[in-house]
Image (cartoon, helix red, strand yellow):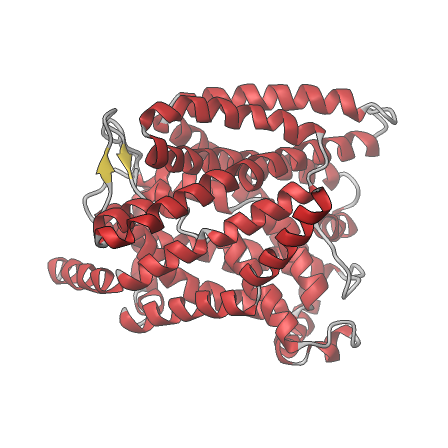
Length: 462
């Protein structure tokens, strides 16, 4: 039975994350960019000024809301995860260095897609019975389109609920336990065969922490992410920049590999990656999976922000994609390529390739850092996706479903800590991709609303 499920999932997954879907995602991003006159480029300095300026302002949000800084941290918590470490490594190994170039292209267009998603989410959000602000793709479909399109909102929410248990929780918990196990093994602290009991204990502890944070409500989620995200991002960026600085003489050659490999991968990989389309596919899909532009999930967090200006909050979408993909994913790629560690082109690779780039530069002590970083990345993703799943469940079943969902979501951590998750990850990734379809249809149909809101915003600003 599991074999049949695996085969069916593989076919669907290959289509969802294949060339047709990527063309659709890139196409909508390009369409939105043209309609907004490439606002992500034209207003990039303004976007950085507005977002960074608002993030530095310390103020309390009203009841049922997050400060703009907490909203962006919650969204970044879900996007800046283990994929930034493991996913980029996998893209380079399978698609060659040229995959990094296509990752940049997907980010450039993704900035506009995510800007549109956040703007629409804030514009069409609602206040639930508890006084919390709620929004996201299901709400801008419900409130922005006619009743004939309502089914898309339920479809998105259903895919969202199914996705969060795997992508947002079990696989992330598994990453935490693996990172801790590896660090303890490397220092001889954990005996062979002792991981089973330790992982069960870790799973129970994580389940309790997740439950306490989620049941504490949107305020507590915001308070946790606003402290965790800046810490983990700054720590990772500093050490990554250190690797690049130490190997700065290799930078011209590395960028040459990236640009040449984008169009002639075989020339860089020795023929191991010979397909231009494979390089493009891996780069684009990695970029999309990392920054979530097109999935619509990040807009769920932004809909909770204490703001009355949808477009102003929308600029955080540009900021997020820039930080997640252009900064963090690029630094990960440079750690791998500048450090000179052997890359088995054409073969699957994960976080171990990125970790080897750090250890080759700093020594084995950095394995402790990588364990801490991976734990922070994974835990922040769990919290961010917990919010997304709660909102999707609430849309489908009402507010009565919130606490039962949170309890179930927390308990899944125990499963993630103790089981092999290969098939679960693959299925979750498929549902993650399926969320793209209803969301992009809605964003495409509501592009006129985005253009109108942008015009009105800048008329008032002048």
